[in-house]
Length: 411
Image (cartoon, rainbow, N blue to C red; front, side, top):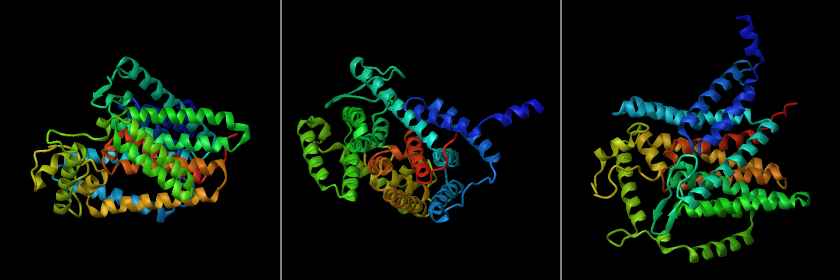
């Protein structure tokens, strides 16, 4: 027993937490099973690391920042107790808890510079893995990691990669594209690294090409809007003009079937369907404004409160993550969630401004822009309800928080 305790004491739990989290980041692109294993390993190692650390909480908690998120989680818990569908709602607690725990773990263990450099390498490796896998899928019809076939559409072959779904793949890509884009600018500004900027440019272009080949309009619009916000914030007005020209040129060469999706009634299918989906979500919110129907219960609950009873898209998610969350946990819960996001971006902008003119500023702005694109995409799709996509979002958010209050490098 003494030997076992001595061996346990020698384990670097923080290091293994980082390793487990990096496996989690990569596995979120191709395997839910491995993602679950990596999450549990990271949680166990992190708990052991924290128990062995004195003080248990290393820094004073900023309650102004974290309280809205705590209130959001409290609203999630309350929605379960008052739900008509307790089984689905209980699963919803786990669905929400895991990404938030990933946020806390990443914000803690990636404060050290060496841990963030490991994440940079994992970030690059994961994207290269996705790019190679998607290239094989485009060339031969199936990806090599999971054997998922590419989908066919009126606009051409539609890539889904190892994600198995073009929406999940798009959500990942709009997170990483701004990071590569800002890396191009950061390395080009340093004469010693200008050759490296070409590699970063190739990565950014490859990522955007993959995004285009998903044939999905929503994430492209979200990415363009988030980049527009960045350019306005930085007052890069020339970049706005160049971006508009490039966007119009892209529209000119984009197949019409990708821009407009007509249904049997010659109406724009996606927009008409989403209007119906949003009306249903609003019906649920009107009926259950305070605590909602219970987290993770929208799919089984919304038909009960649907006043229109349209034949279109029956049994679908709301395709607006915020409306669906409001329907499941109530208006106070979604309000606290949105308030936390506002505080998160205000804090991010201030921290980036505090290192203005440095490569660190561009790195932080790239991550902020990717996170904003993800949230904008949530206005008209289901990425806020996807476990894989949520893990990637909160993981990056945690790494960004860690970089804003860096700790000492390990020797």
